[in-house]
Image 1 (cartoon, rainbow, N blue to C red):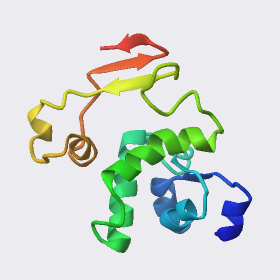
Image 2: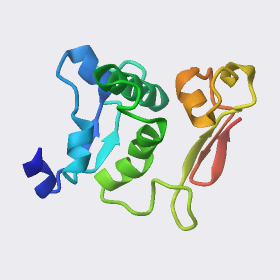
Image 3: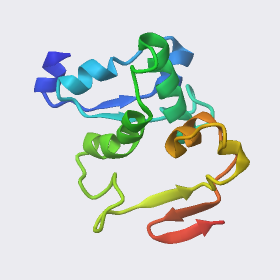
Length: 146
């Protein structure tokens, strides 16, 4: 792990694919501590039928909590891996955050929907309460779905 960090290796963590193939569990904390950027990905259709990144965030959170308890992975860490972590893996500083000057694609969810009432933290609710569909989708600043 230390050699990977020293070499600047970027890691695409694909929890659903890893579980489906039985190929092991990414040592996210160790890799991040060693300096490796870690992003979340869905892998390919041969090992992940849905290619649903939001579901991948949920899988990542739950998988690492099974291994190390509730504090092993936070919702914030998972969201960071899916956004800034992915951008870092690609060597890009123009994506990954909602900031002026960065490109942005968004899926918007109605967190006032009763589906999300069971969890007080809005981001945690999005990951833990399984949304049915995005209310709106924005790609490159253009609304493409309502």
